[in-house]
Amino acid sequence: MRDLRPATHTPPHPVSSIWLGAFLALACACVPFEAAQALDLRQAFDAAITADARLNAARATADAAAERLPQARSQLLPNIALSASRAENLLDTTRPNPLTGDKFTTTERYPSTNAVLNLRQTLFRRQQTLAVDQAEYLVDDARQTLNLEIQNTGVRLSGAYFDALLATDQLELIEAQKISTTTGLDAARKALVAGHGTRTDVDQAQTRLDMVLAQEIEARQHVDFTRRQLQNLIGRAPDTLAGLDPARLQPGAKSVGSLNDLIAEATASSPEIRSLKARVEASRLEVARASAGHYPTLDLVAQISNSQSDSVTNPFAAYYNRSIGVQLNLPIYSGGYVTSAERQAAAQLQNAQAVLDGAVLDLSLKVEREYRNVTEGAAKIQALGQATRSAGVALESTRKSYAAGVRTLLDVLNADQELKANERNLFQARYNYITARIRLAALLGNANPVIEETNGWLR
Image: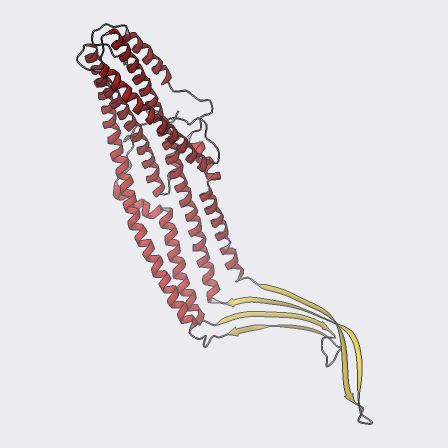
């Protein structure tokens, strides 16, 4: 830990020991606490896979869509149905007397039964055959949509996780700045009482402390908010989060490949594009299904029937009939329905193709943006690391100048604030680089291995 001791204008001065003690305490406070059961990124992602509401909705949608295929295939399999009935009949029969010619009526009460077993097997139905192929594309569409939501869950989870880490880091920096500012204010007051300081130093240090206290309140609220965001994704309140180990992070050590190769890979493997391609093919088959409305249908039909007293003309007769044959249905005119359905399907195909084309262009822009974030983010981390080291050197120089009476206490506080700002920017640059890598991998449908690799950078 760097020695942040500011001296009075006339060194040496007793207040220097106060600064030393305060900043030694600060150094101890800043030592990271190793939690026994810290929640890491891999564990958080596994929890989100189960708990995230949007992902659960997508999973249910995929399960429902998967039933399209067996439903479509069922239309090509035999359809067997059994119907049976029993009735009590009261039959009044009026007929002429063959001898006298007079009419007379007889009443008969009897039960009747009827049972029919029907079988229908499709021999040729163009629409149903195409429906099976279409269902396969629709099921693939649902699977790719689910995969896309899994990738998006990884992106949302990693964003929430590192937002929570950044909020915690920022709060720790503000708390450290509060300690140094409070210590500086105490030193300024004592120097003023001893006749070695100025009222200006006290007022400026008090103003800076008030600002830091306000920032601390906002930072604590942000910590609570980011942890609540993470809680909504993983389904439980997170305790200690595994922090990033900067020594394990080596930005730019592994090449992400060329931009053109990444765009080509994303176009081929992106779950979003694969989903839209499946929709285009399903729409193309819908056009063929609409045209198949002009085709005839041919079915194999078989029937077994058994009836007892089922005819009023011969109420006590029993019939057992078996038949088998084919049934042809040839559409001739349906009021223009089939032609209209063809036009509708063609328009839907055009829409699906346009959506796909637009998504491909949009994907290339997203890949390029994340590619820039990764490549430029690595360079930014290097630059901010150097800036942070320079700010630390500047703080040391300012303290020495203050001890020599060349600089004021405000100069020391400003230099300390600049160091904390550079450290915060460095933290944020690291997290932005990591989340950009995960977003880039998600666009390629490959977020899980990158999340696993990132998890190895935590401690």
